[in-house]
Length: 139
Image 1 (tube, helix red, strand yellow):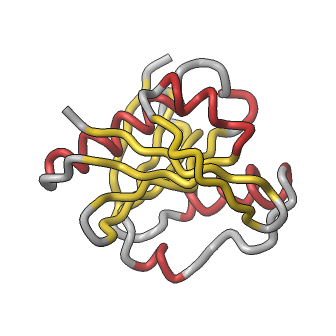
Image 2 (tube, rainbow, N blue to C red):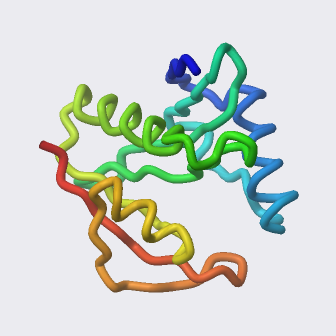
């Protein structure tokens, strides 16, 4: 499987569809799109030319934030999510960023730990789903 990533300055329709499928249809979130989408950068990952995963990143204060990572179900477990995170981190490095913060679903914490993120042990909820704040220093 050949993976390629592209970064967009506005949310591509393919990214919207991936987020709707994963967060709204599969996980039941109702408030998926917000004002941050207007100024965030959007990473879209293609497997053999088909859009299969996405995330967004943006600058906030002294750090960057990555969020809304979503991979279509048939493509999970193949390293695609990690590839999307690496693409976002590489872009952040190229913009001079040195650290990344994420607001991760607690259930996804092991995935982010494998990607090098460390829990701050600060928890909250988003639409009834437990989340944890995690950070990573970029080398």
